[in-house]
Image 1 (cartoon, rainbow, N blue to C red):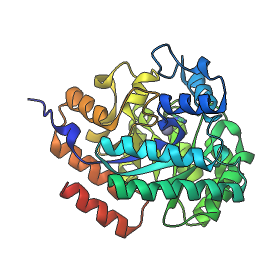
Image 2 (cartoon, helix red, strand yellow):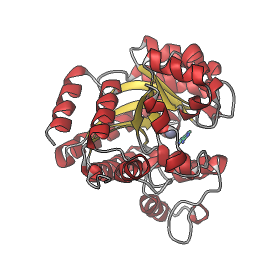
Image 3 (cartoon, rainbow, N blue to C red):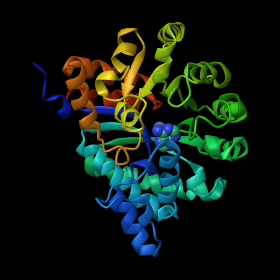
Length: 331
Ligand code: ADE
Ligand code: ZN
């Protein structure tokens, strides 16, 4: 008998793009305030409109055009965290791109970050959710822009900005082209993750480990196509930030039942569950849990194990980890 209450469990989310979590109504409101015509990126029902992955990325970037300053990011952060908390997320890591927050200028980035942290403090007090930031470069913006993002990350590395990673179009360039940026971030004490094995095959996951030295992989699910790589991921204890609903909407798999998350888990790979860009993919953390429960009959124990892995792989300090652990154990 499927456990219908899994959606209520407290949750840890490791893979969330800050701008990608913007509700479409929030972006429409900003467009209205700024008199920017963004009608082309919405469907008649008000949701984001895109055909495929490349088009998704361009709609995403169009939405970012109205996120023009620290105040917009303060409002965005409050809206995103209210929604995450409503989904019983108790700890979240968000991807923040200096490219969309000051264009890679360190002084401007500091202003955006101050506003985001301020809102995160307010949301923690109001909604009880803890947020940490992972700075990301955007792969299709190229290695030079990535260096500027890495320098922003290095300058603000600490208890709150705890990691560095890369999103964007995985079919453009190679992971190794970004080695300088990942080395820079590592030297500044940041933990590392990158998108791989989403639109790239198993070789992109191998490259991510060998060329960038990451300890987590965004998605990584296409590793399942190579049994040797699956063993390697399990042996090395690499954590996958799996986003099943995102993968289904972007056409990697036809439905949850065909998704490889259960096969990867059963092969000993450390899998976690996240939403990626929830309003774009018509999902929430509650829905991800419900769909996994229906597809694989995962129950409370399975999700508790999944959250324990996610918390272990979180890039936060040990005091924060202990605090969140208590929230998971005694919701
Ligand atoms: N940026 C936002 N969402 C993304 C995804 N699913 N893959 C790569 N880059 C992204
Ligand atoms: Zn992502």
